[in-house]
Image (tube, helix red, strand yellow):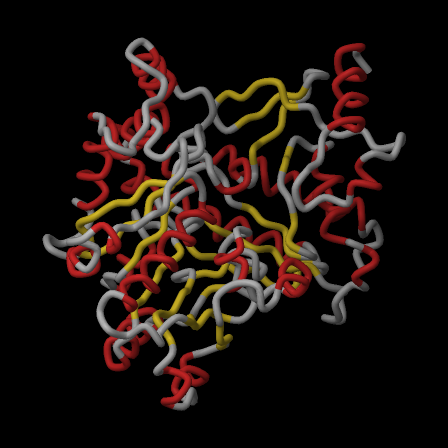
Length: 434
């Protein structure tokens, strides 16, 4: 091990605190984390000179690859002007142009206002607070709760966390946020009595596929049905497209696959192509208009780096790349190729129980050959991801589901590499083929 690698690991284990991480294991002297020092295209390089395919797009953010010259140039060009200015009481061209372009993805007079923030959690937080304040300012103050779906994940800020359906993340904070009812299906929604619905402001869902719930797609047509149901009950529909936005499911936004326009659309992760923190909450003119008038009707919420000019520059460059590199046009062939690769992997590997795929998002569910889950203490999914590193693949599991969510720029050859790495890792962990 190089001296600089050793120093970085020792200093990290002494001073850093990592998210969603068992720190006692991370800081064990035997643990040697990968230290990433460079990225190029779909590849990441560590401090020891090893190269890895970025199999989960650096936590579901990267779209066009690392160190893309067009995005690099856009950020550098903005840096020559200024790095940051407040969006409170000022504006700047990058934010104006980005808001205009985001709204242009939807029909006129639908989603026409954009509120910028920093990340997926705050995009959701904005939508929740806007929805509640809208009700307060339109004579419906009792509507201060929400319906969310079981095993969903919408972020870690307190309001967003109150929606969460994953017990290990959120149980300790129950009751500290918004009132929330959980549902698992449209049938559950239909069974809610009127006295509950009368106190609900809106319904929150990840459209097409749930992410943290081990990549589970929703039934085709469910989103359109949900839109109609919300309309019939006078509820706002809030779509969490933090993961599914910007091409991940094959269309620019997942909701477009069923021609659904929500009341709130929450975006983050891929918005800057995986470069800088930025988020956006889109909403309708009707909702926006309820905040006009006296000072007490304003939306008093914001962040120091709201509409950060560098993030806006990266986001605009990313949207340009969708056009110049024909990103969406190239996706169907890649999605089909990935589907064939995953089918082959399941055929060869008896521990692959199920493949769940929506566009360029895939969950590879691992179980014992008899279909029984692995004991949680084995953390089998983690062991496969760890083994895959030796074969040039970086990704993370959700329990025993391996997530494969490559950058949209990945070539078929690079997808081949990712599946070969998983194939090898699975064979090493199950050498007898049982």
